[in-house]
Length: 370
Image (cartoon, rainbow, N blue to C red; front, top):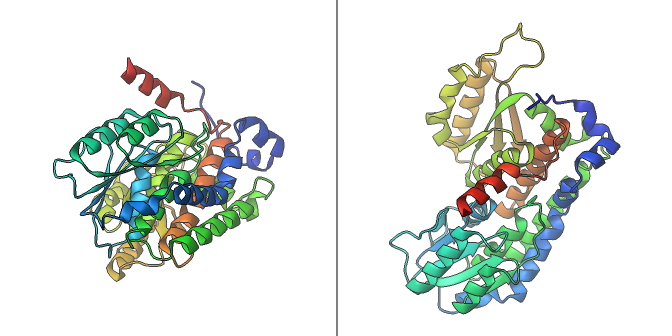
C-alpha cells in the first residue's frame, strides 16, 4: 500500500473535495442539525412518551455497538450525574444478569440487522423488560420489537454513517418522559441550531485559515492523537472523535476522560512516540494532546486538565483545546461532536482518502457471519 501524504492545499480545492468525497460525507455532516429535528419528530410520532406510563424504571440499559453504543453514552452524559436512574451501555450480545422486568432496555441499530441488537432485544423481551428500539423501518429489528410489543422508532438512515444524531436523539426524547432530561424540546432545537452554525463555519467553501474544521484536520495530520474529555459530556465527544478518525480517516487515536486519563495515559508523554526526531525529513509522527473542555468541570478535574497540559508542553507534546458552548448538555455535546466530525472528514480528504468506504469493517462483519 502506498504511503499517503497529507496535503493541506487539498482542503481548499473544491474540485478535489467533490471528487474525493464521492459519497457526500461532508454534506451528511452538514445535515446534522436537520437530523436532530428529524429524529426528535420520529420519536414523538412513535409515541415514546407512552414508555413512562408504568413509572420510572429501576435502570436504563442501552444496547448497541459502534455509533449505536455511543448513543447510550450521549444519553448518560445528557442526563448527568444527578439522574436518579443509572444508565448503562451494553456493547455485546448479552444483557447483564441483574437486568429484569423492573428495567428499561433501549436497543439501537443503524442497519436494523446488527446481531448484537437483535440478540439483546430478544433477551430483553424474554426477561419481561420494558423495551424501546430504534432503527430503520421494515428491518429485522422492527419485526422483533413489534413481536415483543415494544415501542419502535423508525428512522431513515443513510448508507454512510456520518452522524450519530438519528440514533441518540430518540433516546433523549424517551428519557425526558421520565423527567431525566430537562427542557428536552428546547434543548434539541438549541443543539440543531449549534450544529447548523458549525456547518456554516466549516463549509467546504470556507478557506482553511478561517475554517475551524480544516484547521483541526491540519493539527491532526501526522500526529498520534490522544483525545481527553474533561466531563462525561466531553468524554462522549472524545470517544466519538476517536472513532470518527478511525472510520473516516482510517486513523489511529486514543481517548479518555479526566481525571482517569491522568492516571495512566499521561505516561505516554515520556514514551518513544512522544519523542520527535528533529533531523527527520517531513513533519514526522508524534503525539498531540487534544483536550475537549466542557463548561461544567469539577474544580479538581479542571486542575487535572491544566496540569496534564503543562506536563505535555514541558515535554514538547503539542496541545489543542476544543471548547464546548451552550447551556444544556445536549447543546454542549453538539458543539464538540459537530466540529470533531468535520475534523475527521477533512483529515481523510487531506490524505486523499474517500471518507465513506469502510472495507475493513465490512470484511470483519462478513467473516464473522460465515
